[in-house]
Length: 379
Picture 1 (cartoon, helix red, strand yellow):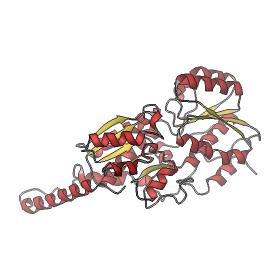
Picture 2 (cartoon, rainbow, N blue to C red; picture 1 turned 120 degrees about the vertical axis):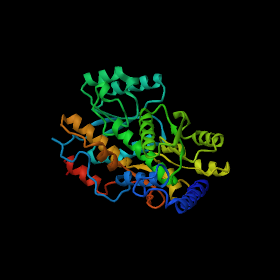
Picture 3 (cartoon, one colour; picture 1 turned 30 degrees about the vertical axis):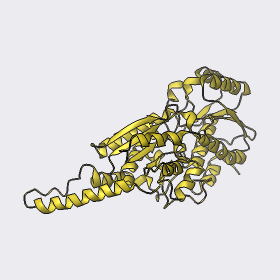
Picture 4 (cartoon, rainbow, N blue to C red; picture 1 turned 90 degrees about the vertical axis):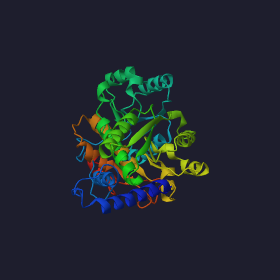
């Protein structure tokens, strides 16, 4: 969707009022032109400055850019934990190319979303006795017992978008709490920038995703810093509604809160099919989220969705696999600082830079496959 007409009219009125005020009072008031204005254009300028690393254009490197100590044996068995969301399916697909490159035996285990299903799935994983496990988003609190069993068997686990790996004795994920919080700040700054200085926001939180609360914290802190007079409501959307009724919940919320000028969502699955439903409801409210799937890119390219905080999901999955390979080899490694990690994997995408191939999505490093192949000692 295009930027809210209501917001544009409101901004124009503020500019006009400001011009009249300056004309009538310039002789009596001291010059404060060098001081940033609270909210409004001052907040937008500050937001734009903060967002520079996430606008693309700079050269990027692999987060760990050094060779393995030894190549990985063909036939190495790796299990992927699938939590059943659309983005999880995309990530599974993104693992196919590196698995083929390395000759891995890649196996998918569906975990379900309730404690009983997760426990049963993780018991299956232990019985499979793989060489390594990849976990995306699943909270270790649900399978603490199996973590001990995997550790006893010498089976490492690498994680993505999991906030508490270290607490459960697992390797630190590259996109843990500081990464998620920083990207939440990007979402908050982008909301101010893209709305032209709106003051009424809402954040659509997905409580079952541990990372969602960190994105929320980041968005709240950055908006408060850039625009102290701004307000942001928080509305929970259950994970079970992703891919089904999430968009309907957003429409109902915006109808009940017509003062809302712009929204932020923890995951872009909330926006799949949303533009059409907003239009049918007569609503003109834009938003931004993170973790886009192919339909989100299609909506953006068509001008129906305002923007997304793209994540290079190919680079993400190759990076998580790279960490797992190093854990299996017993290699030491160190992640770079949070801003480097965040800006390497993410970028703000709108209709001006939407990827031509929505399935491929955003690509942060064009030759990443060749770089990983060299580090993995693949002939």
